[in-house]
Length: 146
Image 1 (cartoon, rainbow, N blue to C red):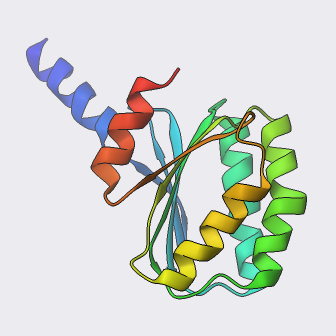
Image 2: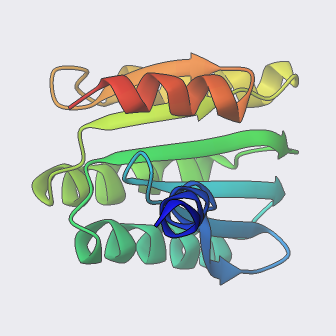
């Protein structure tokens, strides 16, 4: 019984990889019930939309309300991707129950500015956004919300 409990805890802590591309990996963290986008480099508009739409489908499938967006390895966020996220993706995500976003910051000022612009354009009454430097602290916060 102790081995089963230990293995269950370990399995629930290890995120399941659902999407694996050079520009983005998407995981589901069962322990905090959150979809996790781990961005890398720069995604084209088509790649960006594909990954974001996949993350939304996973959010719906898992009946989750939380996401982690790890932008620590992002080179740039195009204006086209910013606008699409604000005008298209966020309204659909909120409609599906998305409520909490943990954003892991990039050390690049241009990426930080783009993310702050995106957050300023969405209603913080609908989505609570917190910024972090590390995944562990982001997950700690997500474990405390709903």
